Length: 230
Image (tube, rainbow, N blue to C red; front, side, top):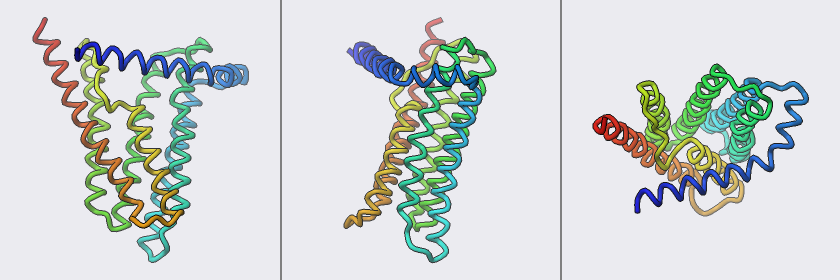
């Protein structure tokens, strides 16, 4: 039963991915005609995520200096992450459709993906500290640890010849949860809701913290079983 659920989940993800590719492929072909390389797309995506991190850091910094809580900046940060995270799909398609797949490109993409998560979740942690949510900042830091370890376990497993792509809280899920939570926090703050909108962000960080670390440990156990069966 568990295997069937995992297979169905993978099939659903693959179907969704193929649907997204059909939408973005015309734009991908345009980029290829313009001479844009996959590594350039990857770099732009990283710079966009870096800009989002800077925006949310500025929001926290301004508040800590006695300014008003600027949820407009938080909303902008969420929108930037959503927009520029699409480049994470574009670079792979540009490489495949343009015949520019390379080992360096794959490594470069993975490295900048990790940098994106570091600066984004680091920015969130800083923001929560500056707005007086220290416990929330600790949760964001644990989420950052889990995010990095999910990727590290897979890389280490592949380094010893094992396949390790299983788990629920992989990068696409983490990006969606983070970006939507930041956007929702900003929008609710601008709307003047009756509760502290930062709670939305903290809850999202808690979800990532729990499930990303569970995914990392599940991958470790998965590798252990593979090695013991040999």
